[in-house]
Image 1 (cartoon, rainbow, N blue to C red):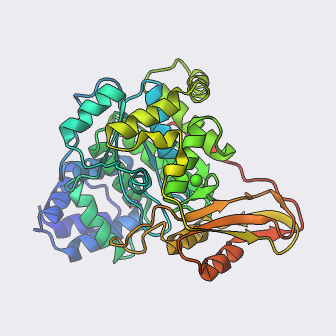
Image 2: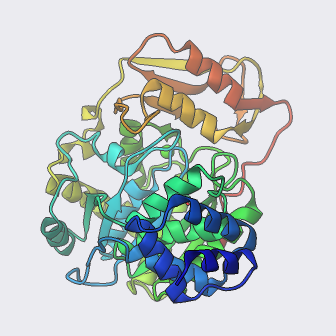
Length: 434
Ligand code: URA
Ligand code: CA
């Protein structure tokens, strides 16, 4: 097989065979096919798109390029959740213990944050002693015992995706639905899930800014998953403003604890109930989505969800007493309010800018090697649609540095007010099964 013929075929809009896709992914991963030829092919895909079969083939070729987590020793249907990334997205911290309490095995591999988005592992490390450096054997044992464990990303999962993603980044081919969908799905499938619930964000703070683009991406991923034998569904949820009130690691742990008690912010609670119901239902632990939802509400109200969080913390070395005493979480030295300059209604909270402001405080990483300050972040006191009087606090800045002028300025530019009342944004736009 000659790579130039494969490039030409795709350039002319023809469908590539499984063998051709395997040949390219394998050759690129092992270094026998050079960057310039794969660059040309990626650009051809960008313009010519891929059929459903090609997308499934590309996904599985990337899955096969490295290690795959074998969760065969975990009892029950393993359901993974993936979010396309957002600001203050505390859902994993809540959903893990919540669905585990419903009997769904949660064998999760998580990452760290970069740029304006946070990462679950950073958040969990706000809990003294908690660590994700456990062996695969310990991981499986903990999931069987407690129904939940979280492990850090393995070094050799989907190396083809890592290499192709880096090449896309410098060849203007990141923004391609078949390439994004196969990239995300390859990582989920390699991580061993039987079923996958996707949370595709839409709005200013999301990767996909419009509902139409989010829907196209969601459908592409749902099709790939189902075509390769993993039951997959997607929820399209709002990211035009940050989720919940808290943005920042320890602040989000506290918010997750409140939510597990049924006392969390309305939007975060609702999204967790919607995603969680799909997870419980996909795992065969409930007869219907409505039954699953009722089960989850009960677990929040009777304390079992919170108890599961504590068991999960302690099993991985964390101080479980923070559940009863969240004041033991890292605390910022300064709490500085952001007073509204006028009366009005909140019309916009530009999520990615708020995320960037939190990153400046130290809550996130500007580069992969930056240190994270677990204590700092931003608590929103008002969300879109709320009425505000001049002088009332729009947000509280949690900082270890007294000088927060730049952060304040950014937040004033990100939290917009108007005299006219607006409705809060719709939280759940769509639920896509196939
Ligand atoms: N996230 C991914 O993992 N891959 C993409 O291609 C885009 C976003
Ligand atoms: Ca939050």
